Length: 339
Ligand SMILES: [Zn+2]
Image (cartoon, rainbow, N blue to C red):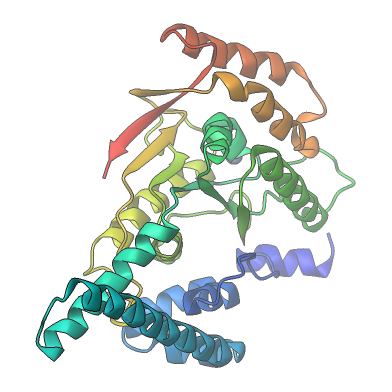
């Protein structure tokens, strides 16, 4: 093990910044992209000055924020002109102040209608968990035009029996494998939080970090591990399950992290949460046309699955059995929580 690895392991998070490969000028993206835990804690603790915190942590934040402000202003002007024409055409007469409010509301309404696209967020502890848990459902949603985002909470740097590979090398390779797998499924983006494998706890900081991503991406569906699964060995699976469930509550209720509301990062309530490997599944998704895609995505995780190919038969059989019970060729099962 080299020095970098020792430092990384000691800190509980590896020395690379988390990824955030989204070309969005939203200021929160910059905050999270810089130092997510620090940002989440500052936002929670200070409440009123996250934008200032962002500027301190990320000098580019000032430029990004200014560009965003210009864009928002232009949007309001454009909306005003469009609605002004509509009002003139229909000869609606309103006092000036009320008319201004009406114009703003109409502008937002049109923008929502024009840009509405369903979104899903799939949150797994390790590279390959999302594919095993919800690979078929992710591929199906993507095929139906959904915007699907993967979050991988740890770097998977303990997932090898090869004594010749360092944890640092392993985490690099596993990110490449995860990106390739996500591409096979049609997933839009993968975000790596890069916590060390096996050392995860469902802390307040992790919960707040996940809440920020939920408020930012506004997913209609969220998928993750069932933390209540009996005899589930891996501690990271439990930690991610709990942090996601708690993060949804923080994202949904306005008195959690109230400073975010003050800067326009509104609450978001996903429609439903789906827990995979569920202790008591109550929802089955027909993924008949997406089995090969799920298998092909899993094949990309060479460090995990090349040693023994038996898993392919096992996964196909399990999906077929689940489907058979409900009249489908193949299925994935979940515990569904309506939020
Ligand atoms: Zn795992």
